[in-house]
Length: 229
Image (cartoon, rainbow, N blue to C red; front, top):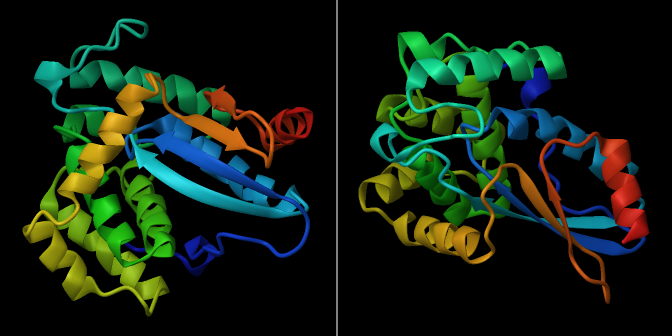
C-alpha cells in the first residue's frame, strides 16, 4: 500500500488558546460514514478557536458475518454491503472501494479495532495515525483489513510518518494480545452508553452537558452544535 505525502496529516491533538472541548469518537475501521466524517473533523479542528482533546472508542461494527445483521439497511451478508458503500460514496462524493465486498470481503472488523488499540498503547497520536491509515487501506485501496498482513502494512505506514512509533513493538503487542483488554473495554463502554450507530460523537464543553451527535455531519454543522451546547 503506497501513501502519498499529502496523506501524512498532522496528528496534533490540541491547539493552543481559547476554550477546551473534549470529544469521544465512537467508530469502527469498517464504517464508511466515519471515513467521510474524519475529513469534516479535520476541518472542525482548524475552525474551532480553542483546544480539542480526542478519545477514540472502537465499536466493533462487524464481529463476524454469523453474528451480524443490519436490518435497517437489509444487510446480512458481505455482498449486500457493497451497495451501501456505493450509495454512501455517491452521497458524499467519495470513491469507495465497494467491490471489496464481492472480491475479498473482510470477515470481521475486530482485528483492525485491536490493531488500532495496539498502536494507541504507544501513543494517542500513533492510534490516530493507525486508524486513518487502516481506514484508507480498505476504503480507498480495497484491502482486506481483517488480514494480519494488511494490518502489518498499515503499521509500516504509521512507522513511516511517526519516528516515535515502534513497528517491532506493534508486532509484539499484536502477538501477545496486549491490546485485547483495551478493545474489550471499548466494547463494554459502547454497550453501556447504548451506542448502536457509527459514527457517534459525544462532545463535552466545560461545565456543560455532553452533546451526542450520531451520523455524518459537515464541519459547519458540528460547529453550530458545539456553540449551542
